[in-house]
Length: 509
Ligand SMILES: Cc1cc2nc3c(=O)[nH]c(=O)nc-3n(C[C@H](O)[C@H](O)[C@H](O)COP(=O)(O)OP(=O)(O)OC[C@H]3O[C@@H](n4cnc5c(N)ncnc54)[C@H](O)[C@@H]3O)c2cc1C
Ligand code: SF4
Image (tube, rainbow, N blue to C red):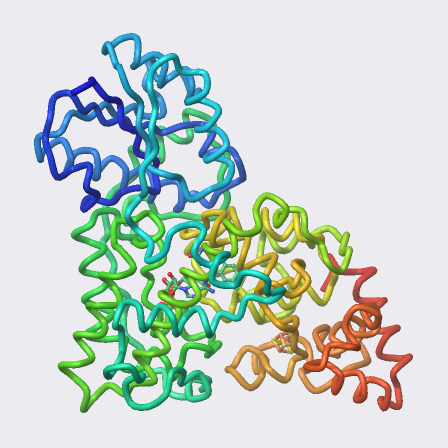
């Protein structure tokens, strides 16, 4: 057996990978904390801490199992902070004859590893990361020749293929999708449960980041770091979700409220994106918990959750590999405005945005509807350049890795891909935000007004968005109605002028 160096990236913490089935002194595992990863965007401090702590826990577990691990901390003098040099260094020092890596999820790393392999003078190989339900190219083949990739057809295929929520060939309880039942606002704060936290002291790790000069955004209480950073902790979060949150997941999936940041969301995205949990084990555990509790938990809760994982998550990955690298350049509307300064502080008079941004800075987390219908909605209505928006989303969230961030941001939220992911842009006026919760009740602006000092900016910007993109959108059959309403507005000109004035003073909103 040739002496083999096996690279494990920071988001490849999959203990069940077949690499670990066999123990051999000829297999040397390599993990490293690298400046190229801390610096490719300005990350939230909790995100960097979560990744490094999870990597360290993973490395020590693998070592305890008897595997050969070489782990390089960020401040290790032997860490050259250059992946190619590091690999070459180990090849020379340890007499390595073969280099292997698991296929990365990011295009940037895929390119880098291919190039490193070309330069190495030993044999090289790549293997699957054994995490996803589909191979990289599956989605592209599934939708061959189609302009729009309909998520729902992909999702049904996954349900059938993996026999999830199926009753023979039919969906369990007769319907594939219960989305229409999953749109309630939360009226009673007593239903809320405390998140499952795993407070641990990461102040030493934080000190290392600070001493090394790593630039981060956001806040952290490093002595009580709350995110799960080991497989055991991730499994506990999953268990907590099944026992306490699943019962209302679907009902309040789209709710917006000042009462709580997490509501009935699972907080499992980091656990899955780092691969400490596999998507299949998460959905199978949730399905089997539901099967044992069918009297209390309705199908709409569990179907809503499972669709996010085997549907949206898997689908976004397929879109990423089908469309990169061009996807990262797409800007369908030609938007070019800078992100307002208050995206980095949360200091805006708009309550919905101050809540969603403030919470993101405090917790490195916002749930899907905050990302899509508050921050994303505002950015799209205001015509912010997708590069600016991507940079923000890629940095701020604990779960942000490009394959799932960019497809959600440029695709689902900004329609910058011109309709690959979505059939129409996700935009709304204040109506939607008001309907979903209590933000508008605590806002300096009036959700009912379109013009005047107190008029909610979403209202005029909504019509401004449609007016300025008429040529691109009017013929879309799903949007025609909006144009008929716009053209009937008595004070259309005044509304458009109000929007112009808000856009000229965007930093003051
Ligand atoms: C603009 C924008 C940017 C986003 N960026 C990211 C990102 O960088 N990383 C990320 O993991 N998710 C991203 N999402 C998707 C989603 O918002 C998060 O996965 C979710 O909020 C994570 O919280 P949770 O684990 O509590 O999710 P839950 O609400 O409990 O959902 C369960 C799981 O479903 C999956 N999921 C749900 N929606 C999506 C989706 N649209 N795409 C992919 N997976 C989904 C996640 O793995 C999540 O953990 C983004 C969404 C938008 C609109
Ligand atoms: S009034 Fe407008 S800005 Fe204020 S919270 Fe409601 S939607 Fe947001």
